[in-house]
Image 1 (cartoon, rainbow, N blue to C red):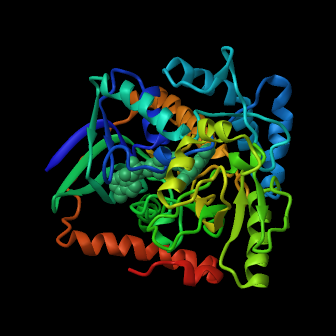
Image 2 (cartoon, rainbow, N blue to C red; image 1 turned 180 degrees about the vertical axis):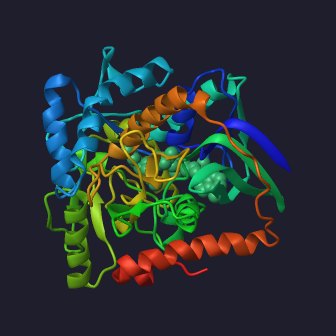
Length: 431
Ligand SMILES: Cc1cc2nc3c(=O)[nH]c(=O)nc-3n(C[C@H](O)[C@H](O)[C@H](O)COP(=O)(O)OP(=O)(O)OC[C@H]3O[C@@H](n4cnc5c(N)ncnc54)[C@H](O)[C@@H]3O)c2cc1C
């Protein structure tokens, strides 16, 4: 089957949805999700979205982002992120997102390595609150068509120019031709045995980029979150948000002793936990909020409270067993400040892209913000240039074995990660 549109967006997380909402309404847009619309990492996000609180906070936000990223960040991208944060949070408010407030004033929480409270949130399920509002808006747009359960397996490209993607749905091939294509396919957590990510996210956008010679960057920069719930029965590791530590949670070893400053950057806290695990031979440490007010904990962290309770842990009284787990991918498809890749008419936004903003260690709650800032820029760039784009449609290759094609894509990423991070080889799932 062949379909044509102006803009093809692959991915329905914050980056894909927000790109679509910032595009011109006269453009025919197709939004694609590998599984259900809400099976995204965005939907799982708990802690919140970082933002400069005001113009005076911008230089401090920049410095915190650089320090967490071990100064390996791209400074121009960090400047853009911090400077454009306020406008994008205002735009989310206009789109109907409700962040927590006290007496009408936005509440800001704190997380590791932030020098001040600057994270807007909706209780402990910010991602769901944001995604639900964006999806509501998308559903009202007549120019946007959503395809679920439709899997990208390759790009349609020639002479370093992208004209769409090859997809599979119910074992049939669908070719979607587009003037502009945006990859918003998220991270790589589905490739790891222990990850907080949706298991379906296996770096597919990155794989098709590599296959087609699109430039990629920093593939060894993989973040392990210090506090995923330690429960052997979980297929996906349930995250215990960093905002608990921001609100006063403490980390304890198996002897009940504190061993680290809980608000250090993620890489440093994870390293200290691994040391403790090695020293004590116990496969986890503990996080505790038992000293905080019970009703405050239940009201501020309702999702974490109920998920832990399901597993027999009452976080208002009990210690929570936690250990690090793969969480975020700082590397990805190399993009410029307008999210353009090295291939013509191909953009990448969100976790699949590498804007360079995070260096080698993302500052807490900067991911959703990156998804907003750089997908708005992608949309603005597309709005300007699309009228001048003409495409020559040709019939792409026919794929006979889709399962094989999907496995090949996964193997491309696994092999690339092994090349950069041999130390993680035992963490990877082999297909
Ligand atoms: C548990 C958890 C908590 C988090 N908490 C926070 C937080 O508080 N603050 C913060 O800033 N960040 C947080 N993060 C990180 C953040 O949620 C993600 O980095 C961000 O949501 C990524 O958004 P995205 O739009 O790039 O991708 P996603 O939201 O992951 O969406 C990816 C999309 O791509 C689609 N896709 C993938 N492959 C294909 C394919 N082959 N064909 C078609 N479609 C495909 C998927 O179906 C999906 O629709 C958290 C992450 C996790 C896992």
